[in-house]
Image 1 (cartoon, rainbow, N blue to C red):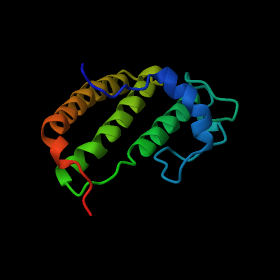
Image 2: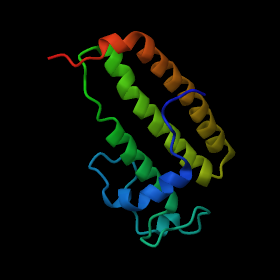
Image 3: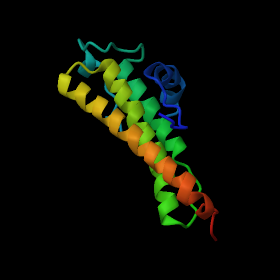
Length: 142
């Protein structure tokens, strides 16, 4: 794979989650926080704050995706679509890696792996298009 985006590993997502969870943005795709009762007995563990470790990792991946999607619009729909979808796809990959780390259901794990495989290919395709077709078109327009 010649992708220039370096996917975050689940370990990196976990490391980033401590600070990122505290800085949770208003745009939160995660479920509302619980008192920890909903996660009691789960295999993924509960963080000292009462929030599942996997939840912290998902929130960190989501926050990273939202930050990385802050790309300047060019006025060219073809370029803008790809430059905004690449970090969106990377966010899906990062979340799928969290699922592979913590999920126990075989169907969830299979879906997570499929998402990783599909999104990596799509990112590579979008980057290739940007290198060949989008380079001359990517200057911001008024």
